[in-house]
Length: 272
Image (cartoon, rainbow, N blue to C red; front, side, top):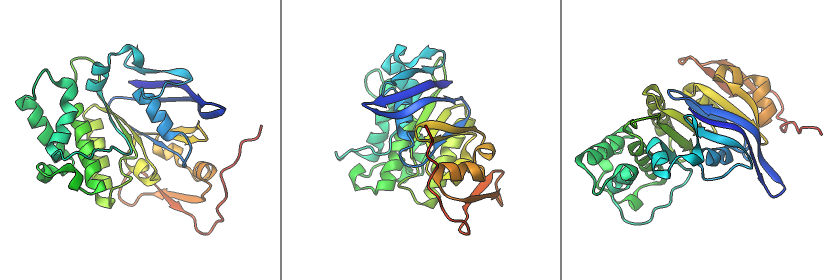
């Protein structure tokens, strides 16, 4: 389990995260949702070790994250940020092979090439293997970076579990590829990987997540299965948008529909 316990992040006078606890269990997809500025990306940066919390701890397995060597962390946990800048004319396959770096002992082995091709196939980009990466569209580049992250944790480590951390992985994708990416993530979870995904689309979170953490102003407003978290009152309280929550016509999950008949209101401001 990847556990964030009582995380607080303060920068200057601003409190970005306050006493948030979240757990990423192996074999589950956990979605973090909330309005802009709620602290979603800050929480993910703490989970990756990029940002040290002002208070609280991050543990991978039964060990503090900072106690694990960086190479061991990289073998067990891959991260897909919102944006990954790469301007050199590497081929798509070369970019994906970068994900195998923590596993290398010298040059790439036949197994590393095999994993890179399999990761590209998993994101439906195997036909682009020889293309120069900068010639791809933004959405295609994002899918290649997802393949790179998959290649990094493709093989289970000798000890411990694997984790995939995704920061808005569907933001630049069209409808079909949004679902394809989350189907891939859900498939990894079914294979035992712990997945943490920052998502803006509540219906994608409802359809694919096993567990949801809903943030408001840096605090955890609700946590639990999608059906428990996505209530009309809860969504309106956090997002300021009246909604109706109905049964999805084809999936065993709730469907969140904005209620155009009710006036929108700003999220409630906590009183002192």
